Length: 505
Image (cartoon, rainbow, N blue to C red; front, side, top):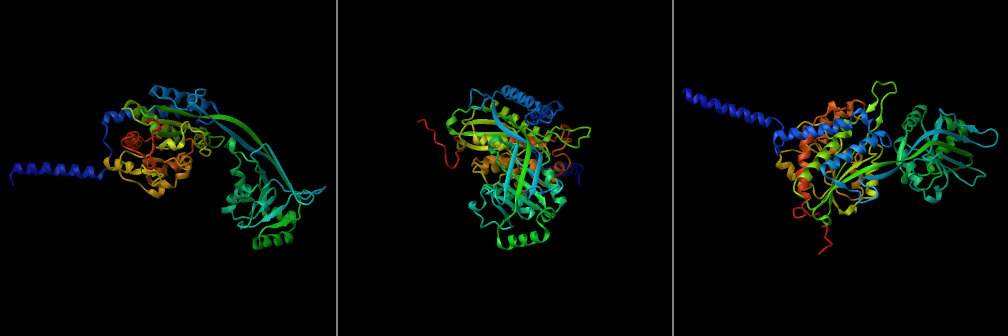
């Protein structure tokens, strides 16, 4: 072989090696130059480090952290060129969300009446209510039935339950659902039997912290819990054994026993806010696209004696808010779209998707005019080129467009079952339940291998800080969203199955 041929062979071998190496690595989308990716990363980190700084105190609703967060986000939306999206001149940018927080204080459960009732010791039973005070009394001379209900409730009706004080025998896995069903039938109070003091302590721990609800969701419920040993002591071992067997075998049993349950709570009402910006479209009547990310986090967390108790929430969810803002900036800077783009920063996601639920109950545009919604939550975990998880897969008519753009950028889908396990744990669920086609598309949710270490180490912890941020996958996802939304925002390129008709001729 000549030296020239050997040199050519060496060049071909080098090119082949480079090609194989490129194939071995995940292929990051190359739809923007490296310098532009770097600029995007810089803007994302600026927003993340600001929102996740100690100055914002963990962004808990109803605190100075909320005030600082809303001021910062309003300024950023205005800087981007958004206008208020509340559709309420009296409340630009900020949409009030009425909340109520309750914390159990004292309670009393007593069997019998007269001068010698059996008062259940606090270590053997307790009661809770979302109201400041609730009292239920049942038994002889009260006009209120005390009903022992076993594990099967199929034959119970509202007439059986309404107003009654219920003693519930339930499997632990079913107890919460059965209590909810009994309260739906207007039970006056529900006293649940638990196996022992350890089980009771676990339940008490679940109610040891303040609970936040939408003010309109508040109900006059009175829930109580008691160990089986305590009710055996109250009624007598032989009597209790017979009643229990009867209820489990034959159905509900009316008890000739006096029972009173009282609970007192610390309760406060307060107002938090969703923040809504908008990019007006050229043809608003053609519908709207919604971007959303929750701005709230937990405030303080961890042991009282911990050196750092601020839950900064850098990944959850300063990262999601930052990506949403950058996406809005790019959409605003590019060619105008036909459809309005709403940009929603929600409150109180961490305590039950409350801000998203409030938005769905009082939207600035009819929900059936929102042709697509995209949630951004906990997005800065995966490296560039990672697979993509779709939370809400198979639930939206525009999914083929998403898949088409994934193919164009040589990205692959991750573990579908893993992504779907988060469906009801993110704001998009509140919209899906109301018929709004909504997805969360993120490389963070592609697999347990990607998200698992964060969930185990930093999730809802003071260690969720800006130095843990990985922006490679988040930038890939941002660019994917931009391409998809530019197509969805163009009425000529996308019409939903039940096409929205412009009422103007």
